[in-house]
Image 1: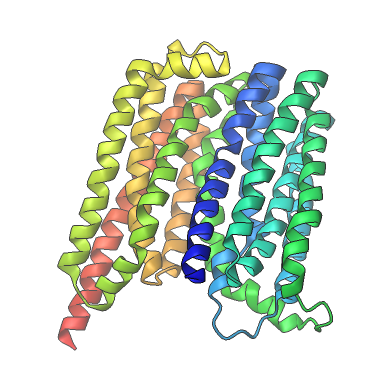
Image 2: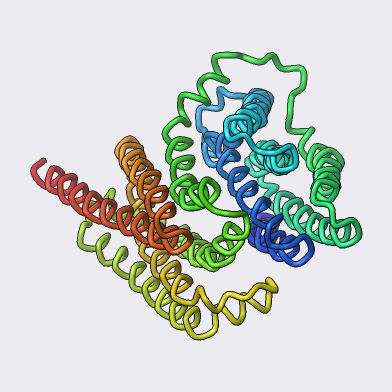
Length: 414
């Protein structure tokens, strides 16, 4: 009975926490655009996107590896030590990036502060892993929920009063730091043996075991944001804001895909282990049909109402970008189908091949984004986004179907 109650608490609070946290960037973007203007919003957009990419370095192998590690050789203290190293690397990397790009002091400060915000989030994640391993996922959900809600409220309040992005972000950092020490550490410290010695080999083991997971996640984030970096190189900050706004609805399709795919991961694995290729293909097809249906409805709504609704929310005239918004939604739908195939490959533990795929797509994304954006400005960035997503879809669709046929044919021969 107690287990059932705890499971329900874990489930409800985890959904609430991760759901609200996922939409934080949307709330920040709306606030900055309305309060600080379209140019500052452009700086905030590219800085936040960069912080999200660098965040992948912070979490590195991720909470899944931490929670599912079966041999129990790595202590919680060693996971924390590893996370300290990765979060410090985040800050070093963003400083180097800003120096290489030659950003102004103001722009560089925004980049560093937002990366620090994501570094705190990455460090909190290792504490969340400790809590999750001890069936305290409800505490994780509550932490995420209250951090997200309080951060947005405080940020909007301070930014409205000061009209100063730096002060507003610093206040948000303070709130997250307080919750980390007062709530997260307080609830997790009984599961951490502070007297235990740290084995350096175990810290290196985390880096080694999680490399492909990290590399795929890092490259995947770059692929999604490649057009933004092309805009940062060739266009004014206001175009960054516009592109960020019309891309934002695409993230909703991605979230829907996550909620859709995750419950079926065990079923995908079971069908694979049963060598049931027909059943697995049927399941994949069902998921694709649902995504296509959601994408079709989203595309219609985006074309008919998208610019008006987004314009009302952000306070920016977007009527000239109706077709661009439609293209982004279509591109995101195509990309999400690729994500379904990627999830299948990850479930059957084919990560090294995906690493190669992502390297290829990243190179294409860099070339296409820079050429198209330089030639056709924001319209070029939109077309580049479509081309990148289409290539990702084609490679994953072709490779996964070939891979499954080969694997299942071998199993039949045996």
